[in-house]
Length: 231
Picture 1 (cartoon, one colour):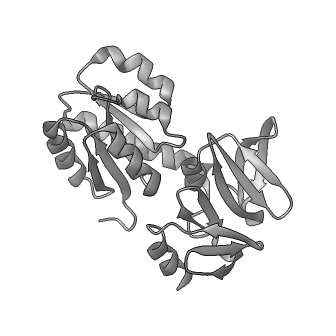
Picture 2 (cartoon, helix red, strand yellow; picture 1 turned 180 degrees about the vertical axis):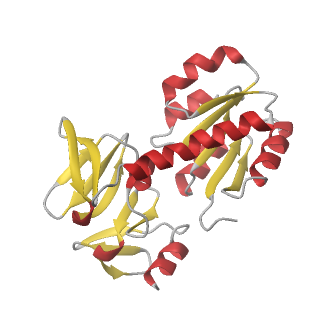
Picture 3 (cartoon, rainbow, N blue to C red; picture 1 turned 120 degrees about the vertical axis):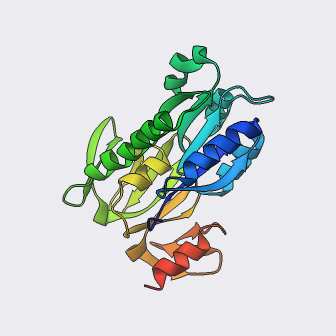
């Protein structure tokens, strides 16, 4: 398995769909299935507390449909929709999903969706050039020097990026910002916070101190944080 496989969840009320997708995911070493949900409420609660890179989401579910779940989540993971009904295809792309898989899902078509997913990360990495990333902020495109970033905080459908000289409200999700930042220099320490590793001033039990400000540390992120700081 590769060093850092992408974390996946399946959200579907049909056990047969879980069986198929689990089998497909396990054949790809770049993916790691971390949780299986059988309704939207369970998925919403899990995503709020755990890092997720990719969600396989059924549309037609009781109580909360897949599209309703995408509306509710303030910052959803990258999503591949799955359904037996082709009439949802056009509407689904209004939610920024990667792809739309029609059941029964065949393995070659699944692989094509996964390639689309990883191309997203390749595009985000290409944004990083000479230690700058491009963000939509202040009514235009800003080329931001990543060396000046202290930390970032989720703010609804935006991200507040705190730098040594200014705070930016960027039109992007926390997951998108994390994917665009150079690896090893930044770490997710909470579902709503990303910090620059070299800007950490203090490491306490439940919080970090960055630029004299206390940043909460989520319990699911503590182990990775300790590993990075021990290097």
